[in-house]
Amino acid sequence: MYTLEATPGRTVMMQDTEYLFFSGYSYLGMHHLPALQEALRDALEQYGWLFPSARISNTRLALFEQAEQTFAAQANSNGAVLFSSGFMAGRAAVHTIPAGAHVFSAPACHPAIACGTRSSGDFNAWAAATAATINQLPPEAAVYLLSDSVNPLTVEVHDFSFLQQIQRPLTCIIDDSHGLGLLGPQGQGISHLLPRIEGIEYIISASLSKALNLTGGIVCCSSPERLQQLRDSPWYGTTTPPPPALLHVWLYHQALFQMQRARLRELIQHLHTLLPHGAPIAQHPQLPILRLPPFMDEAFFRQHRMIISSFAYPDAHGPALNRAVISALHTKEDVEALATVINKTLTATCIDLPLP
Image (cartoon, rainbow, N blue to C red; front, side, top):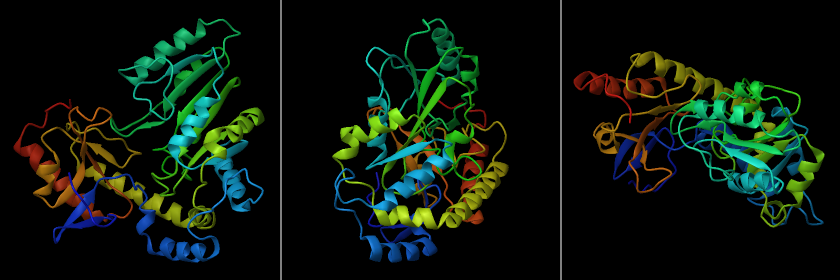
């Protein structure tokens, strides 16, 4: 475990030594971008660092609704509701599930939205079995399917094309915390990849802190009744709204986010060209994450003046998961240094060593 004294960027100082930082989830690195920091200083003069009033009070800030409309448009939804955090957003989304509904939670579903029957194992196997089960339910049954869009631990973007096999109406609640701002040409998230099928309603919840580096959460959906349920929930009315200055810089500096997104995609592509095919490393062409074998742990990378993500999750007492995470703050030379360390180690050991 490392105790840091400053928020990391592409590097971090620790005990007077500089380390390359391949951890965390600041995928776009917006918090360290000078142009955005300058924009934020201007926004803080207008908005301060918080809005000291509930969203349901008689003093309301127009900026929140402007941000919600923009999030909804990007998600191809009719509306959106901001919350104080991604976890609050997820809880509010599942709070709209009616009593008696048939609820199916995907494997490794985030606790923010997980409920009903918990599943384990492979996502695709679960999807096929769940589709068959749902098709056998009576037509009047209310059916809800819950899943994350991205599993950052196994380095997967989940494929929802299996929904085309379902022959009845249902509602999908998808946690897009690790997809929003990253997936899609404009960072729309998983909504860009979802099949649009008559009878399937999508509710997309997300933390805004991952790629976008904003404090808060969002739920996007198209049903007016569902949107009102979200606004009536205690997770909306009794919590402090997201910092308006951060939402302001996101709303009015989209070009900076797009610039960082393009830069990150170039780095991901470059890194993947440097790693051998068939190596015991889980990777995905759209994700800035590498799942590493057990012997490539934090102690190993520290010898090379690099810090990776290495901790047990979701069971704090389980084995550590070793992952290297790159961000748009890194340079081409940084990812080349990471690949060099990995490749030399694979060559010196057994390149066919399987992941656990």
